[in-house]
Length: 500
Image (cartoon, rainbow, N blue to C red; front, side, top):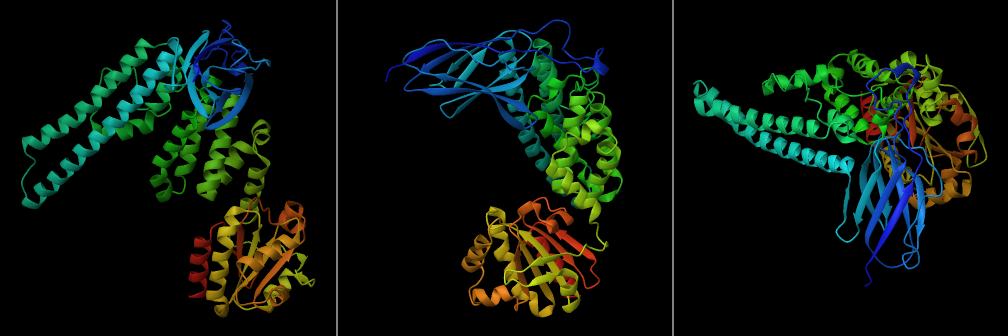
């Protein structure tokens, strides 16, 4: 095997943008224009032609920024042909199915990538990034050590309560050891932040990852472990530089905001307005910077649409999305439809009627079908090409078989662009004891339809369907009593309703 060293000089247009409303902020973007130079020494490159990709982050989402073609046997120097605007952040170079992350700040970046040893070295920015990752490892170890000590401590407390005797000095020493481990790590973080001041990892990443480290307080007043959680709630975003849009150029931003919301989950479950407090607390910091504001609302929308509660989505829409045109324009079309669906189809509302052709050719009037049947109706939107549907539809059909004699009816609308695909799926996956013809005629209580219009179907638009599978559970009064995307939730709702 022939080993070669390729010197890659990569020039990219690189600068920071400051929002007009944040010109006097803490942002590192100032009148000093950052260097546009990235130098890469690629060591131990072997073999044939490859493509080197430059990957950037926007929150947890990655995107290809640029690429260069490498012929290892001919050329030794390369450069990106396009001039791409970059901000400071975490980036990756991808080659030969390997990813090499690195930090980019204001200074020119020189990287040494060893493909054989799978390592990446660089200047002070990259050294800071590597030191930051070591701090992350140390934090994980501290968490494990603390958990072990906590389990021992809790067990001793239980034993003490059973015997009715106070905690002895050994347990007090154990608690002190737990706190000492924590504060040793705090000291390491503070040392890292001081040593690598004015680097992306120390100034941007560190305050986000280590939320409990407040340089102005913990360094002089060491809080007891039992007060840390309350302290984090009050100071979680205090050290984040929201004024600097490059705060988004790494996966930590999304991850830490989601972690904060999860930490508030218990409050949200017990207090119907707790999510409003959480959202307002986050947006208080994110709002002044337009780029950060838009991304944060997108992130919160995604989280609440996936995990609920619906009240949080409505609150976001009414107070942040609908009131700001720049935010509304940044929300994806799919999410806007999902929000419209939530707002339009609240439980207890009357669903819209529609007419659609069944697979048998007969025209179905939805309200007439509901009135003619007893029990409840599941209006189901699905597609044979949807992998989730391929798993869920047979489960829902099994549910139908179990409850059809108790009053469960199904109107299944396929969003396939070709009804033959729908028929093939039904025949292969559902029709075991029933002939296809009888199924098409709808005499089993499960009616199938496909108008071959997909998401452009008038019925789909009436119900603001944004994905598949999606089910609406409707009672005899044409009232919506449930919305679901999982068969387990449909099963629970059907079982509860029909067994009452």
